[in-house]
Image (cartoon, rainbow, N blue to C red; front, side, top):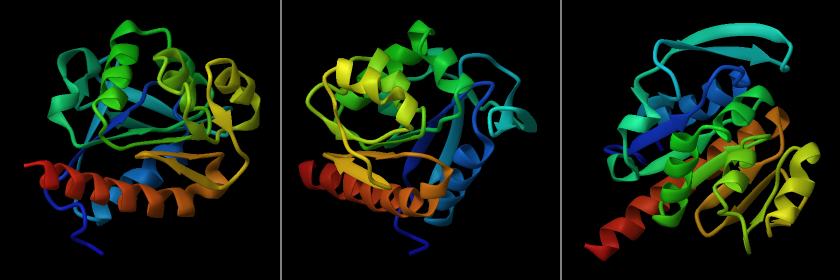
Length: 189
């Protein structure tokens, strides 16, 4: 299992307020599978993670600005949650453009908890089935998405989960989908 994502470039898009375990555990899952991970954000320096949206967690160094990259630079994307993180991303034009272009490229994306807010803002949930934290499900439905209440949902390369309790299932499924995304890309060449 340690080589499934060897050579794959995975972006994680996050900003201040990211739920720490929703950043660290998916990152660890794809790194353990061999992926090279880049933390993208809307500002340089470090981002402040939170625990339960209330308590400050660790800070994490930003590798690149989302305004300086393209979906072509990566093979897969992770959108962690926390309430403040996706709320900040969905009002940033560069983040919304990147997420929309990434999903439309057909490359795999994993999003957990409140992370789908950015997908809603990028108008890429219409006709898709996904799950999320309960408080944003109406937003997803209003954007044309179909919401189900399951620990992990996959819809054509889009992997979503509800909350930190779902992290084991989410981590396993993003590794699987990101590996399949690699095979789909190889089959096209």
